[in-house]
Length: 274
Image (cartoon, rainbow, N blue to C red; front, side):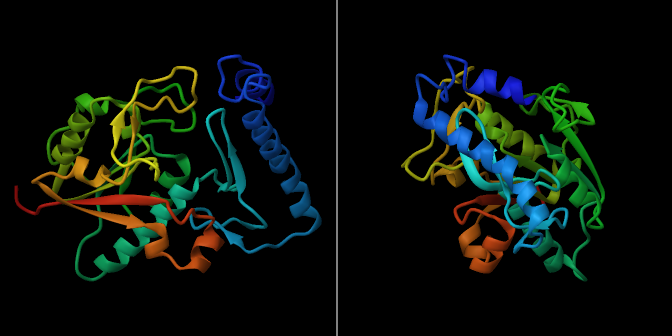
């Protein structure tokens, strides 16, 4: 989206959560974040260096950029080198840990499927000595994901037991039929395969809940997920583990890679025999 289009849809649209005259506080946060994103590149040219580093593309600099939308403003979130979010960087570190554990004892994945997988994460997976990674999405219109093919997770066209790994990052919160999607991921995995799952997490909620999709919000969520998310995806066919950034990474790593300590992912290991 162009800068003018972003201003029109975010600050000047009356139905936007960051409308200038209806929600001035949120609009102010968006403007401050946008100004910071414009100033940082010039500052890094004047005074190069910095302690931030992206584990996806190797970028180094003074600060990660602010994520901006009508719904949310997240400082220090986006890598200016590859566009990765902090959740992508956490996932990359998790993949590396998994590969270290497998070294010498288990074969690496041969076929990987990623739902709405970012270009940055695909680049990492394919340059980490892993197999072919196929990207799929519900539509081909979003250039951020550039899918190899279009498919609906609720009605996946793939045969059972096709993939060694399946990545599903920030997808499930957009789909009302959560159970159907989780069952499909389990079905598509080979015995012993892994599902890497990420969803936005709301610490203030006691229980996950379905919500009505608001077409005027950028995120268009159908779910708000809480600490009980793990129980929602548990199945007899796999074991689910939760990895919280502050528990698996040191404070130095969190700072250097620009990862929110509360960021997390779930790793579901399908049983070797069905």
